[in-house]
Length: 260
Image (tube, rainbow, N blue to C red; front, side, top):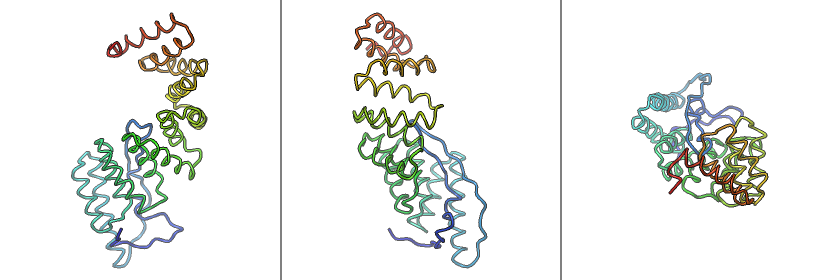
């Protein structure tokens, strides 16, 4: 990809664009939020740097529009940045965030990939790329993206969590248990991990462990109908028909649509 209007940055310094990054992560595959990373603005001198300052001003304008909810205007400002610097990682990333917010998964995928071409070490972009691949049910590609993030940060809890959920979808329950257990170790407050651990144990037919994990989840979130449905299946698999009926009744009470 051609680059225009860029200023070479010494490797020892953070990229200039990073001070304008909307550092959002679509954690847990359910959504996300964004905020402006505030860092001291470096002094800008020289003609090339003045051009860079204009580019960063456009990016900053896009972020103001983005934070104000004027998403179409923000995309317009980010595209102006990309006209000056087609490989600008933060501009591609922030456009991707808008597409992901709108559930335009294929478009978001393209933009996250473009951000990574501009900066292959941009791990937030790689993490969110995995999320939008998951949303498109491209589970093998999503898992690879999460694994790449974990190569750089082996204890990053959100990457462990997202990989674990993806492995559950892929039917790789043994690895899913290992990864989700690691995610829970790194982030004990992420209580929904218990639900997915329960599903992974269920697929392994490790029913006592599945029951314990699901009951732990339902103690924390007693309004989760799908958790009761999973618990009903586990009870039924163990021949505990009365307990299964009770769990199923609770699930349908919380969500009548489950009767269908």
